[in-house]
Amino acid sequence: MRVLVTDPIADAGLARLRDAGHEVTTAYDVEGDALLDAVSDAHALVVRSGTEVTEAVFEAAPDLVIVGRAGIGVDNIDIDAATDHGVVVANAPEGNVRAAAEHTVALAFATARSVPQAHARLTDGEWAKGDYLGTELNGKTLGVVGLGRVGQEVAKRLDGLGMDLVAYDPYIGEERAAQLGAELVEFEECVARADFLTVHVPLTDETEGLVGEAELAEMEDGYVVNVARGGVVDEAALAEAADDGVIAGAALDVFAEEPLSADSPLLSADNVVTTPHLGASTQAAQQNVATDTADQVVAALAGDPVVNA
Ligand code: MLT
Image 1 (cartoon, protein in one colour):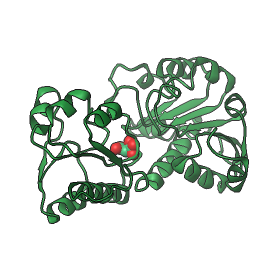
Image 2 (cartoon, helix red, strand yellow):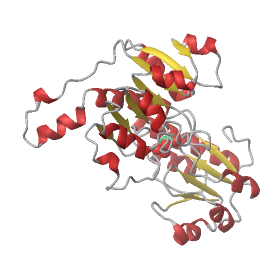
Image 3 (tube, helix red, strand yellow):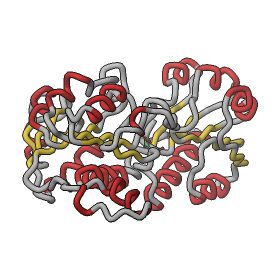
Image 4 (cartoon, helix red, strand yellow):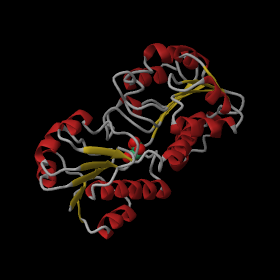
């Protein structure tokens, strides 16, 4: 059967699809009519976060059986339209969890110690040793919004680095939070007590703009980290809070619109560190999610049960 892959995935995933006898076509960076044309005869579509799988895509692909998402978030896929067209949507929820957690820790340190800013000054020939007085994570309070798979891994790592943990997650119990070393609190308290606030929730109607002007004002010289989804933290409010010194700094890997526009105010705030959605970009994570997704596509095309549908 025909499998169309529209965002780059690891070769191991492509090989697994071909080994199962499927005809695999890669068409990266296609959008609009080119995407509709490419998908028109596909039985399976494999994407990461770059392809918007809209109602029009499902309409253009009458033979589509499954959309495989090589990663966790499915916010780029119109799930209602998939259901209406009888198409299975399956993600790969495990394979990049450690990579995302490690990137969160990396960004917490990067913003606390101004690593990218100091590096940029040094590459410009400036020895700016006196300009960067950093903050230690040890002894500070980490606020985790969302104690799902990634949030839990972040909590474990930063607990091990001597941080006190508070967490907000309406879907887990106090006992589980306590096992992770975290005190479960209400959202407002989590924000107010956090020296470092990290969000690990999907983008939904409930979470869009969850951390906005009012929350940032509560943080009093704190740091914000977002390796989850753009839009969970209000970017305009964050840029202003960072610029005005309301918060000490922020580190963002994800943005409401990707790629991030070069004239985003986030890029002109000195104390905001950015990376281009690299949370899942490790060799191990990409190998994992590519092969996990390929396995699900192969199962669906064989009429077998799909685990992460
Ligand atoms: C995810 O949802 O797993 C990440 O956004 C991974 C990706 O970059 O595709």
